[in-house]
Image (tube, rainbow, N blue to C red; front, side):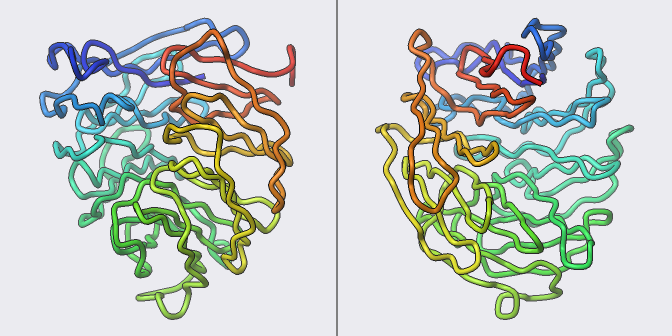
Length: 352
């Protein structure tokens, strides 16, 4: 199990410490026991933004690392991109810019064949593709505005692949091998955080403080606003990402409202308020016909993945007062859950 973390600076906005002491960590844990196998770190950049209460909400290691089964890759905003091998040896490090804004960095890197693709919109208004083995830049796309979202690799009709970036005002589709822009669609007139998802040649994009959701058919060329946009809804999320299942899209917005939309029409099937007064930062996940929604301070709700709202369970960890800010991971019929202080493996002992 790979996770990121930060130490030395920014745990509190009242007493943040010295920025020069900031370190960004990639940590490897044994999947079966939780034992830490290695913990490697790099020094934080001098360009790291100063701590505010907004930054303290999530810190300097927000992005999820990604692995190809051989190496692991992590993105730390202005402190750059790092690659480690399975034993924790630093393979390469790359700089992607020095810009900061608002909450800081959030986008997670994605792998596509031999490329590591990083959305550094906040750091330099740029999306980069690096050779995953050498760290050399293969291509870059500039002019990506106010996009905290992770890139999405989606399969278009005909079996080709498209790289979808959801940014302020426009949604773009790129050829992922070269960075060539294939299409654009008028999108959300605000900054964007949620990750797009795709199913059977359609991309679904959430975003904006006013909360909106769009569906776009992939495979177009040029301006596809009038030809490929299937529907647009006035519900959505500002922070959290959705899942698709059996003809419906599900998510829990940062406003603590769980939503279900018909994926073909955009019609709302239900909206239900969650049992928390805090914002929700973790994204919904699905296992089988169950949905797991992680609140910051009231545990995890289990819902039936159905267009009719049905709560199956509500679980808390009573002896851990820390916030749940991270989305769960699902592995071997077990949930990997993370609070601000602990990593948990929840499920049947010996599950396969």
